[in-house]
Image (cartoon, rainbow, N blue to C red; front, side, top):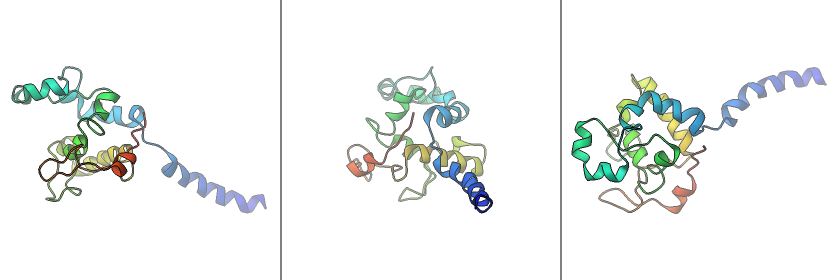
Amino acid sequence: MLNKLIPVLAVAAMTVPAFAQTVTYTKDIVPLFKENCSECHGDTSPLFKEFKKQEEKYTKEKLGPRMDSYPLLISHVGWPETGAIMRRLDDGKASPGGKPGNMYRYLGGDEQERQKNLAVFKAWVGEGGWNLNRWAARGDVPAVTKEQIDKLKLAY
């Protein structure tokens, strides 16, 4: 009986980690962020409110809002800047016009790397949590729903 179970257990051991592994901020997002985002969104960048006050100045300096910690980054996913990460990093497949977000190109050196890194961000945000909505509707962008907020995972 054990001889019959060994091949089944071997296959199970090879497939389970791919599905069971949780994408976390510390293990997966931090290295990706350091490699692709920290130059403009690191510890020398302004906090969001300061960035908005002087957006033109900081943009010329190639600085965006600071996002180099878990609380700062998730504030651009959940609240108060709901969906900002998704709108900026999206490859265009989730947007009505099909246009990639303005930061998508920085996710990697080529399309394959960008898609791989986008998949990591999407897995971190959570199945069904990746949406481009804002906290409150603005223009063509609708307000996020409670159901969408409930799908956010954002494991530390």
